[in-house]
Length: 145
Image 1 (spheres, rainbow, N blue to C red):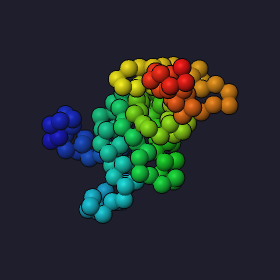
Image 2 (cartoon, helix red, strand yellow):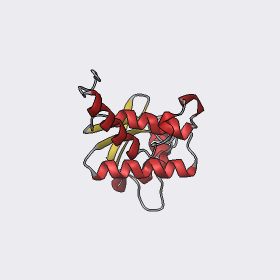
Image 3 (tube, rainbow, N blue to C red):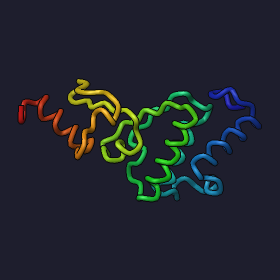
Image 4 (tube, one colour):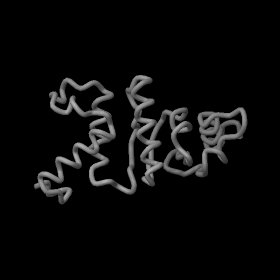
């Protein structure tokens, strides 16, 4: 049995197969994890987080260290999760990626929430989320105020 998830052995195998399918890791799951690329490691971590079909998923830098194809794949996985009704919370310093994948954002600086709203409301025309971040942080720290 798999005591942490409450699955029986056969149920656990089905759940593992389900999450490996989502992250495109069928086949390599039998290789030694020490041989995995950074992208494969990220996929395994994401698969582990998906066990049990969580309603809310909290991810820290899910695209960190990935090549452009890996980033695209993770983005697609997150889009599919969102379409399935999963709330995905992403912590990231890759603001251009957050802007592409998130519907809402919050900017936290020195433990204080400076702004939180939809990307559409935060990012104005001819601006990026990075521009917004810099503006809020500089205003908060007294620069360009």
